[in-house]
Image 1: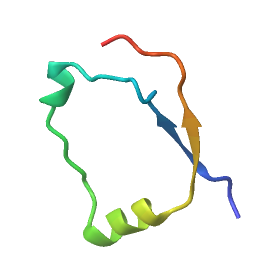
Image 2: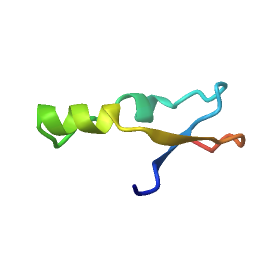
Image 3: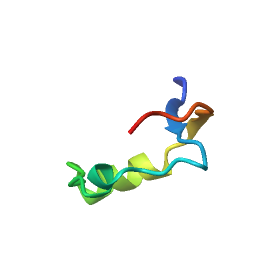
Image 4: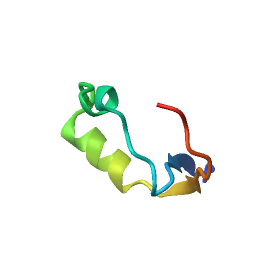
Length: 53
């Protein structure tokens, strides 16, 4: 079995800027591909440093 993919989490104090909130978000996947990706086990990594907007 291969290593788990990593998902980086923003700090819980992170506040996105207006530009980021208005970005268009699209997922180029079939419903089956999306379900497989969402249900796949991942390694969570918490980012402690706040990133600039």
